[in-house]
Length: 199
Length: 177
Image 1 (cartoon, rainbow over the protein chains, first blue to last red):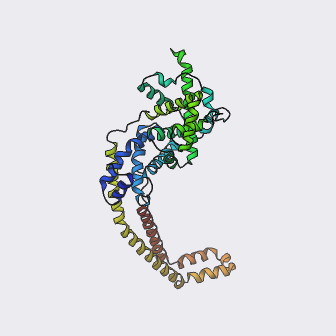
Image 2 (cartoon, chains in turn brown, orange):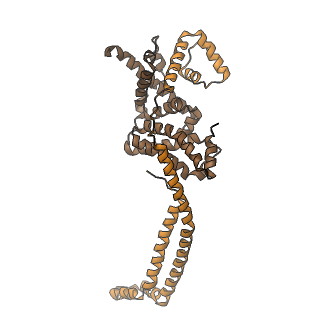
Image 3 (cartoon, each protein chain N blue to C red):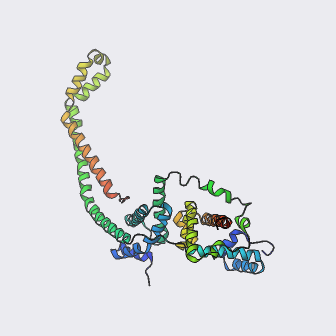
């Protein structure tokens, strides 16, 4: 049976270097994936992934081993991503509300706007196309929505774990997730409407 | 619940399996009776299914190995840092003692050389200072215990440098890129 993250970190603190290696192997792919999704730069994503683990090692004395390590790791990674994104693109976060406001009106629920009997577009293409198609749409979402989608569906975080990683209340996480999916549905609907014209 | 359709929040929570058993049972009952909500729920679940298989960007194959190496280097640096700490602490303490000693010597020299007396005389008698300004300034300069002042400043500089070293040593590194 695989050892828990907390057990591995405890073993590492006790001097077992291999224990941390297992943690690195376990979390390098998801952290890299998250960093790449956030920064869209392979080199930066590598740097963030490496620095995340080094930050954890540096702060080992202060890390609480009675709390789950996974949200802590992702919180460190996300903070590093934010720092780097701010340095590269100072305006990255400023227009988030403005961009999402047109679909967030409570009197205009998206489910009603797009409700029809036609099967969703992704049900009419094969699995690989579905995945690539939706991935491109997710990439167009604002970064906070992209992040919650990725943590929830790709990394299979619970709402609580996402909330801890993003340092947000659970209800805010739920709202972000719903809005992200609303935006995705809108984009899918736009694609569906333009589809006949392309054929 | 049968009179009105499910809200997007209810659909979301049901599809995400985030409801308690009672709320879940109510929604299941409503969905079995309501074709529109059944359709909405199917779309919600279908979107969730596709999102769960979004492609993952794989890291370079050697990234884990590079991180392991960086962690090991960090461990070595950490050991060196911890080993250096007592020496820097002792040196800082010794420099502080030197600083205190030289400061004490400088104060005595100020007293012995009459510098303090001269300064107090010039400040209490501004007429002397205004009449013999240049001579008064030169007299004060000549009365200064320059040797003691230089030694005190040197000790102060050493304390500052060692204190900086000590802070660098106790503060963990935060950037490795």
